[in-house]
Length: 87
Image (cartoon, rainbow, N blue to C red):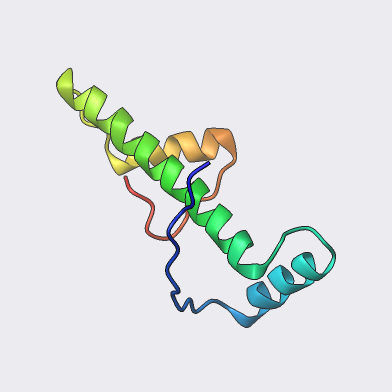
């Protein structure tokens, strides 16, 4: 397995969220805060890429998905929108 190149970044988040992540790590739920955040970012990127692909497929057929379509889908699925979500 090839080694993944890593880069140090600084992330600012609400203090309550940071404390919750640290408690989760301390309880053995994740290897480290960095590993927890990296996994969350990978998940978000996967969802955003999938949404972009879906939008491109619809656009190829002349259909444009508006933010209202995404809002409806989130409501039906019971999923809250994330800040900065690609629409």
